[in-house]
Length: 137
Ligand code: HEC
Image 1 (cartoon, helix red, strand yellow):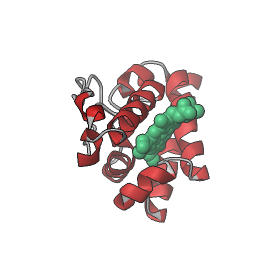
Image 2 (cartoon, rainbow, N blue to C red; image 1 turned 30 degrees about the horizontal axis):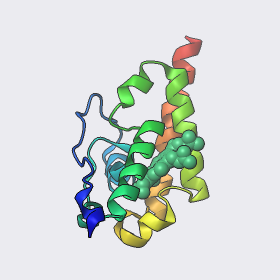
Image 3 (cartoon, rainbow, N blue to C red; image 1 turned 180 degrees about the vertical axis):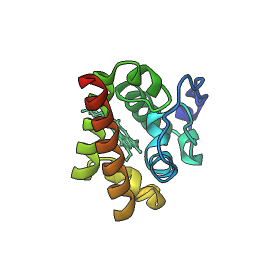
């Protein structure tokens, strides 16, 4: 039981500039991605139990660092950066790499429906084309 004595920090940092998208897209991404890619992690009960606690903590820290929907306005301040982030999201959703399979095993509701995938893909295409048209103006 000694491992239980090592505590991990389960606090959430402040949200600085949250993603804005159509309601369908926002809801789907919140349900499916926010536990690891936002500052609004809903820490599950098993995240308090070592050794899961260490592993989950690592995943969330790592996921947030790579990609954080709570800092989306940092990306949108430069259309090139946002386009690149949007491309990554589109690629990982299309390939089924995100959300990760081990997370879906614990959180089956996080699975995106086919309709949600289409809505997200459309939203990404719209966002990118609006950048392209404002750049050519
Ligand atoms: C269980 C936690 C978890 C969930 C849920 C999750 N991710 Fe991730 N994601 C990660 C981790 C960890 C990494 C870093 C992977 C690496 O560096 O190898 C990552 C990386 C990424 C990256 C960056 C990839 C790159 O090549 O840099 C993107 C984009 C991403 N995830 C999008 C998503 C989207 C979109 C969703 C929801 C559909 C999602 N993730 C759900 C944990 C998660």
